[in-house]
Length: 235
Image (tube, rainbow, N blue to C red; front, side):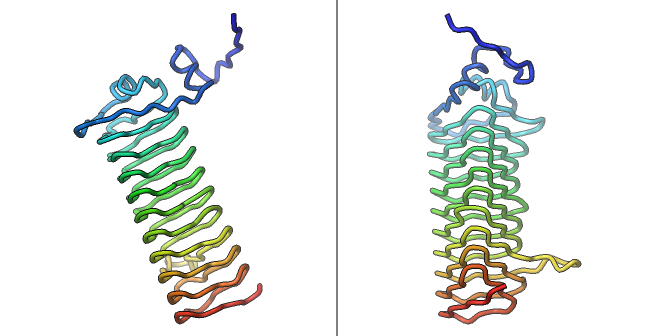
């Protein structure tokens, strides 16, 4: 016999919820045609997980093989495609998620579009009509607002991207910050193909960094750079 002491704050009132919390079960269901869910009860019954939540007026469209986890929250209208995995604690609002993308635990994604085969999170915050293309990593504690990134962009952890367009094959190191607000308006920047932004770099928008350029770690970039540049400026 197994004895458990359950905190009331967990609100565990059924065997399914107990299993969800202890085992962090992930359930995969295949939808051969698009199925639309309008309430928590219907999607819970489908996945046999009692801790999936659809807020009032939420609409969730699922197609293909979809994996959901406990404590997943949906708001607004979202569309989830084949091969998508949404891990525990994630919050999605008005999101399009395309094939093969993995949303890792405790990510918050609002009003965004995600392409194919991306790795998102854990603990990232994507918002305000940001767009991610295909085969990108937007990793732990990354925040994006009003930004667009191209294919094969790597932002593995702890960066802020605001009002920036990032082209293909860019690497953005840990602690990179786009300083996009001047006290009156948000300023835009453009990062072209194959650029490397070293860890701790600060980009003072608005600027444009040309393709194939390299920015040394901890640099402060205050002016636009042509292509094929090596930029080093200590704080």
